[in-house]
Structure formats: C-alpha cells, structure tokens
View: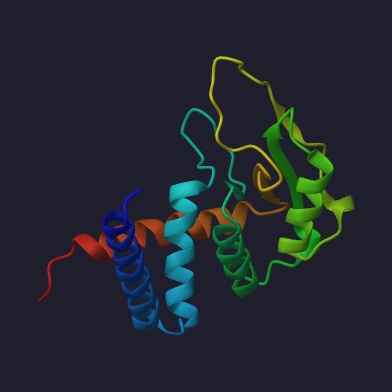
Length: 171
C-alpha cells in the first residue's frame, strides 16, 4: 500500500472514531424510562414473539453481541428479574470451544456456568466460508426468563405503546 493511501485510510479511521465518540457523548446517561423504552425496542427486534398460531408468552432473547446482552439484562434488572430466574443456553458451531464460550457468557451475565442448559450445536457446512471462527468466536447466548408470561405481556403492550406514540400526530 502506498503512503498516500495509508494516510487517507488513517484519516478516515480517525474521522470514524471521532464521529462515534461524539455520538456516544451526545447520548449521556439514560433515565430508567429511556432504558425501559430502549429495552422494549431491542426485545421486539431480537426476542421471541408469541404468534396467534403459537402462543408462547415467555421472554426469550438471543444475541451474539455482549453489549446487547448487557442492555437486555439491565432492562431485566429494572423489572426486578433476578438472575436465579434465568436459564441460559449457548448456540454455537459444533467445531467451536463450547466450554470457553459458556465461561465467557457466564462472566458477562454474572451467573455460574451451572445455570446453563446444554449448548445447541450448529452443524458445520463445509461449503460455507465462515468468518466467525477462532478464539474470539463465542456463539450466541439465549436467555430464557422463567415464569415470565406477565412480563411478556407487558413487553408486548409497551411495544404497541411505543408504536402508537410514534405514529400519533402532534397536537
């Protein structure tokens, strides 16, 4: 790579970093209400939903991003859900290090590995050129909240409240 291109890329990376820092600083601290709303939107995007053809009013959330998991757990804290009500399961490729992934997610959640159900192993497809390999690959974490039907209904109702609030015309 020539020096001019290297300087351009370095400049672009600096600009990206500065933009991200400014955007993060503009958010600042979140109130409990703001965190509640963010958590509802996050759940509706990534969590399991009950369907008319399959009623399953239970909070179940899956993601591979530790920050997304932390935000979801913080929302559960706001709702008074204690860690002993959680069942965790790693979903990971069969060729990965399941034990290391469970330890990693246990540390993120702040709960013992004994709270984990047996991992769901994804079969390897040799025709796929996977990029999520190596020591940094930890699969997805699924969080099940036991006895959560009432919380699920509140989550669903809050989502419809957000949608309704967003589409109402100002006075």
